[in-house]
Image 1 (tube, rainbow, N blue to C red):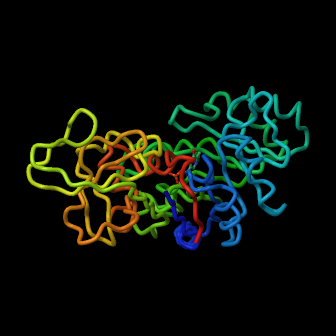
Image 2 (image 1 turned 60 degrees about the vertical axis):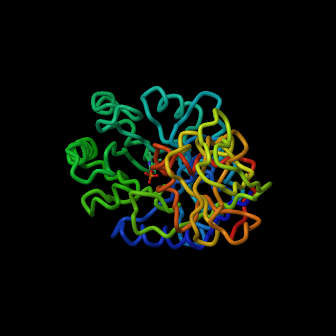
Image 3 (image 1 turned 180 degrees about the vertical axis):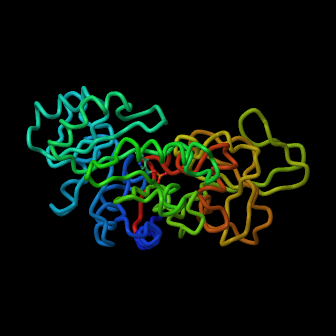
Length: 338
Ligand SMILES: *Cc1c(COP(=O)(O)O)cnc(C)c1O
């Protein structure tokens, strides 16, 4: 089970999104272990491409990559200052007045950022909370003021200009670097770029960055091959029955490896050097069965994520989004970096 990760493609995607960020500087979102691809390898590769501002969800994720980045790299923690968090060497993004006062009493003089809620109602200070402490916060010199768009992957969604206007209203005259756009926001254009952008999924080859270079190839070894006669079934629930003589290969990965059971019977394929082999029967925890009748010779491994079936194509078949496929790819894969 080899998950091949092309660091050069991640770097190229960062450079492309940095270019699309116009005058703004591009950061890099490496939360959830760099979307499952390995933060300790991905973050230094992005630093090598020029990224200096990294975003993680949790302080622990920040501590995991801190030793792999030079001192001039800033690591922002999106969950802010939670009780007991080890924020040494990190920059918490403070989401509420409570987090702000906790942080200032425990980390006086240390760098911090502020998150404002412009309508998503998930994280950040609400307009009235912000108005009440804004002058005091600005006197402390935040490193960044940011907010997050709920619908940036739908360019025509009315929430985009609404959140943009709210962000302007809340940050006018602050004289602090501002950040609003993730991958989708970068593609909305210069009005959304401000001073720093925060691309995540596009770095890893996912939508909404349709021009992204693909980053991963996932190959699953064939454990066993067998011939089944018409009328024989394959897998749990006997959900698939052969209507003609078929050759079936069983490969070593399943839903415990992030290959969701929901993709059973939805037309997903595995690929042998570009030749499609349909998944048959149900995806089990550690195994997937594949119809390889069309192959002259069954290879040692078949690809489930490859140029013919990129992450977002597989996600659609599983009824989810590329983000969830990437972050579900489990710990059982050997990660090979190119
Ligand atoms: C996850 C996240 C990002 C990155 O979003 P993508 O859509 O993956 O580019 C940026 N900002 C915040 C606050 C996030 O939570």
